[in-house]
Length: 288
Image (cartoon, rainbow, N blue to C red; front, side, top):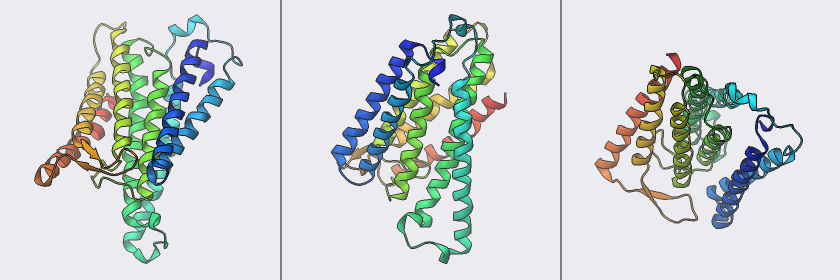
């Protein structure tokens, strides 16, 4: 990763990593215990790890030459494909286990984190968002550059999008194991994880538009329209369905602003359109 970045980009990466570590520290210190504290510790560890990885190589690798701007930037795509495979193994392995528990419920170990109710969303989130999400983001970077005949608008944003998205998925599945959930199908993560995904997804959309604006190809190829609709509509669905009021800014509990029938209608407006725009439209862009 660091070998593909210039010195100024590495410094930006260090700054973003420090910001992530500080966010994790604030979350852990504010919550003190429970899922939010654990997730803060995860963000802190990831931020510090990135500081050491990027900072340790700050002057170790020579800067890439100016000719790099004439080549496509595929390092983030390769990372995204690796994460796709990792989440495929995790999500599908858990899926096989929870399927077995439907036939052998007595095989459930005597720990809350191993119950069917906590493991099932680990499977669905791991497969849909971990496996599917990483595949869509990684391939969108690859397809966008080839069909626009332009390099990605910058070298830092793709890494921020992929690392930030995977942090969201890690927060989600570890939260389920600790019993933290909004009890919304395909939208279980709590409020702070939802806010984090809004930031990451916004950066993803901005990067996509910036790259398209630099295209050397006069026409916008159809795959890009599919990818853009996937990014934009998923953002709209996620924001509207996850509007919630936290019980406390220091805990992983919240209440949706919708109630009763309205909550059910908004949830399945989200659920069915998530299938349409996440699991269909994005993959149509990949296939085209």
